[in-house]
Image (cartoon, rainbow, N blue to C red; front, side, top):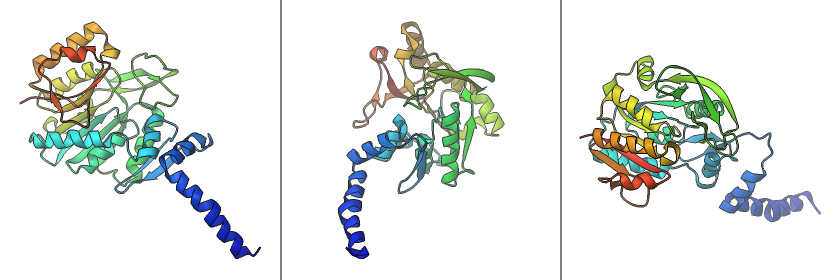
Length: 290
């Protein structure tokens, strides 16, 4: 068999079918589960950005299989906020609990902010967050901070959930945590002070901090007042009945507009009666004042 014929057969009978298979969702699932352990991360090129992720992790696996991690929801939230007339188009956004930078990237790509501050405590996540900002050439527009957002500055133990879930790390000792690491703790007031940002320049906060949302929302109120739209996970599962009721009372007292974004296929639901969400494990809320 000639060398040309052999190359043709290899290309047509082996390479093309394999490429087609591994381009499918099923093939990508097989690929993501079969990568050797020494291959720690992959780089995904989308039409408007690049992202480095661990394909074995929940977030990374979604990016490999579907091209994003919650981008539709992020864009839906931003579109809704813009329609409310709450964005100038040149303000600052904060991503608290930024993980590897997915929502940071999606927020930047909306073109609604001149600056973003992305805060992440978990060491591995932060390395990828920093790399994802750098690989896209956005170091002047996005500032990554390696810290846990907390109620006071200092050091604090972060509980790591190191198997398959990069977003499960928490300041709370949650089920599934495997180890702890001491990390820098910083308040939202210290963040904007250190970054030389005036409070009225901040126009939006995206928050995903695994159980400390109540405490940090109170800190946000102290620093920015009630005007600022904040998107966060309301998690009775983490808080327990008493704290959940206190959180609901806080929301009622401080925010005139409370919306649930639980179903991305429907319009956000404005909540008047908050008691039903006390019986959910988790609900995505957007709050702001008018």
